[in-house]
Image (cartoon, rainbow, N blue to C red):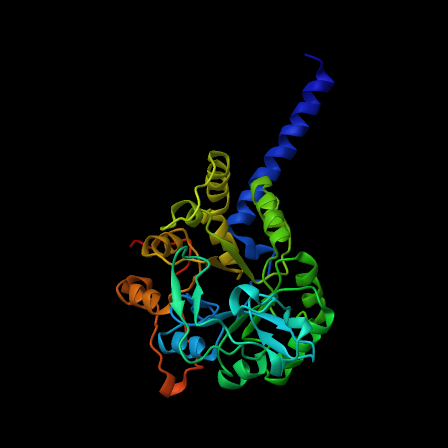
Length: 349
């Protein structure tokens, strides 16, 4: 073999070997080069839309109910009305939830319709919830006023700079910069929010989730700084395993979902992020087997539509080390502290 070729191959092997060793070392000990993020919240119990399976979603009644059952964070969605008020609603178009063929941005706050008496639960096909007396769409100001110390996860649904600034003004007014996390599924939204105020934590957008996976599987993740503070992703298996399915999934789609589940639900990835101070929330989990799996693979917290059932599950598994005590009368806005162990220590349930 040609001597220069041997030298070249040796150099290449040294470089590749050095890269692999360095990548593995920094993957296990990321704080060698990355400063660990220190958030003032670490929720295990997160109520999706305030607990859409037990009360009318995104209403004050739902929020109070969730907090009375020990939720540690409220997950909400925001839109802007025609007269410039930030309201808490998942849908921008109100036909499905309110029966009104109109967008929130085309109507004033005082004219917003109420939710229907009965709503379907998006992540429990075939399941409906009776809304009760409180069917009003609340404002973000109302939520912040009622629960000033409760960590809130805000999904800004549309790219709207006026909406960004309005939400930001409210966060600043209520001094909630350290107990609020915000972002959008569009990367442009999350980037704009982070630029507006880098001091408020943001979550990964959909595109950044794909980037994160590419970095993880290429071995580049340990070298790359991340500005996000939480990874909030769906557990793909819930689509495959959910009960009362209303439609049959094609074989191709089922295969894609299974592959996505294998690629995304990686304990090693969650452990690495945890060591960097980046929390992982899985959504939307409504079954005991889903909660069990989430904690086993190292998720920091889970988002659920059934806050009382999740609280009962956590109480029945004290090995999780989570304090879910809390009462409306005592201070429904209190931030409960998770005592969950490091995610690289597998939780046995």
